[in-house]
Image 1 (spheres, helix red, strand yellow):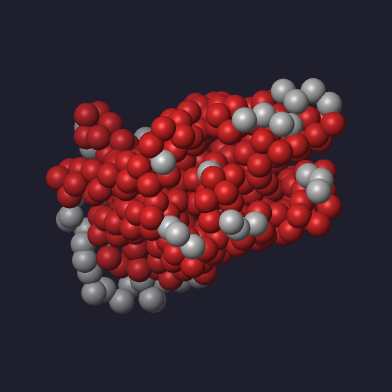
Image 2: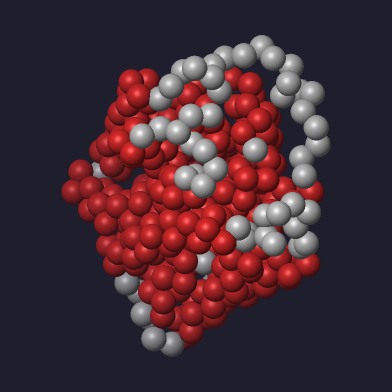
Length: 392
């Protein structure tokens, strides 16, 4: 492990941030542009949920394997694979003329999702010493929120002006530029290795499994955000641009939220208490959506804000926790396990939520389920007793 200089750390942080952004936006863009896909391709809300789930559940299934091989191949090769898969996914979304093409694009997105955290966590564990990892973890995790923010503001307007294809072509270009930057900047000193150490590694600490269960519950609750655009357009009778701005608010506030949460966790040495607080905030987000459903529509903005500092920010604490607990040798493998739980929850929600809305014509059941999952996440953190000095 080496301690990079401030300039190098800033460059590395930017590449990691963009990698996380493009990888996760392969799924998040489906929610943002759900009304467009429904109109263009004549598909249902449930179909959009299935496409989203192919991405997220596919990533969940791939995550343990990808995490294990990230430790073997090194973060640089893994990162290049991630941004390449993201670029392919964006291209297919842009040219999609049928549900089948969307599903293929979602499979590429699954590869990108599965590799994003293992590759970036591996690079952080290898390149930065303990005590200087928290801010970088927060920055790179905020890449997700940055793309939600910029995507919410810019992408709907591009779609209206120039069409879906142009929007996704630009996103593919960002992914390709990230690959070029990584080739030029990121060290290749850790790649590849034929060492059997990854296969022979000891069992992961039990704490990793607690974080994974929590991740499943917060992922399930957070997946309700896929319906935000549809909820705002259909239930609240606002336009797609308004929906984009509301989503952008959450994305923007999630950037400092993730950085602050990660820095707080590193300085305090605590992971359980921040994760408990995040789950409780997520309960409040669901309650705000219930109010917006039949009351003042702008409570959806309150929900977006609470989601930004709640379920959308858990990753920064969870990922830092697993890096500290597992260490450099197993950071990729631990990431795969936690991501399996998180992405399984993230993928399980949308098809169920979409079918509920199709069947009942109401979003209230969705918000109740999301609140229940967040509540269970809080209970998990109350029961967790860390076996290492992560929370004492």
